[in-house]
Length: 385
Image (tube, rainbow, N blue to C red; front, side, top):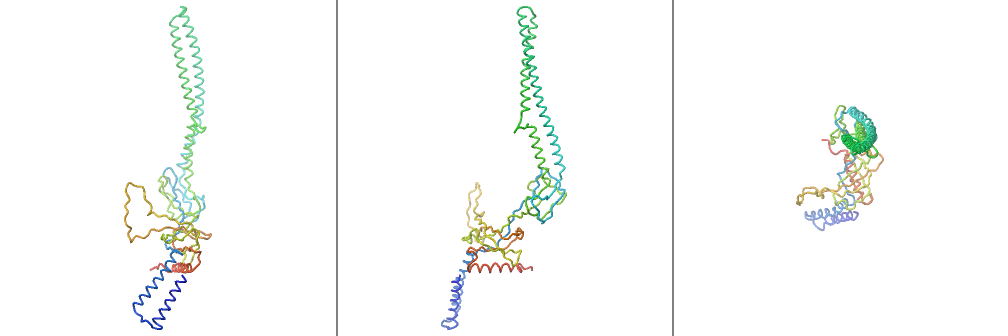
């Protein structure tokens, strides 16, 4: 840059000496045009140097993480209390909103009763297994006796010592007792299946009611909404008496997180040729006229939606870009220094300059003058009339 200043100085000196001091050549509009043409091309050096050595952006804004506060409830529920003030800092875990607990308490109490009943039913199933076991033992004893009676009457009938009707009656009773054994065995198997229906060592009926109870308790616990982390509620519109809950996309408030604000600045792609992570940055926020904030380059987002092609059955249609359409830009993530990050509210806008040569040299000096001029002009601009 010094050589450019020197070139301009020598050219102006020679021009003045030749045309005005000695008047060796008569000054005309042609020579004046030549001088302007020459000076304009020399000024390109300043433009190129400032663009690539100290890239500058006027499209910079503070970004903060936000959380949409959505009630996690199973049905539309009445808001009974708002426990937070708008724009007032809150700590993680602090209650924000209270919903009507009664429907969920009723459900929890109902399921607790069902759980007690299910637990009692398991004991009854155990007793049914014992009854079926005894019934099977009884049937087997009766079968043994019926078999003995059948054999006895059959032998007597064959020898003519007993009536044939008795033998037939005992044969029929024997078959009945044999069927009763099979029935008792089936009942015992059914009782065992019902009693031994378990999952993870717990009866399935009890496990099912416990799962419903845990879900009901989850919804009951969520009748109080807590702050997910340190931050604040902005534009609070919730009032006691409104109903919310079941519609998942129906956020009732926006929670702005304190942690991790950063500056996102847009740059023309060619200006980022020498930009690297860790380089120093100066930021002028419109919120603070006359102040300059120190920062560092945290990341370069070398991505833009113009390069994305979504899966489709349609063939791509490539058309020339209109010269009136602005060039697609890349964003640079910048972390502002300072312990008090609350000075950088979400949406604050301004300009920033990246110094690729460690804030040394003539280009950096010119850019520092420029960004400070921008900051001081914020006292006047935009004009209120």
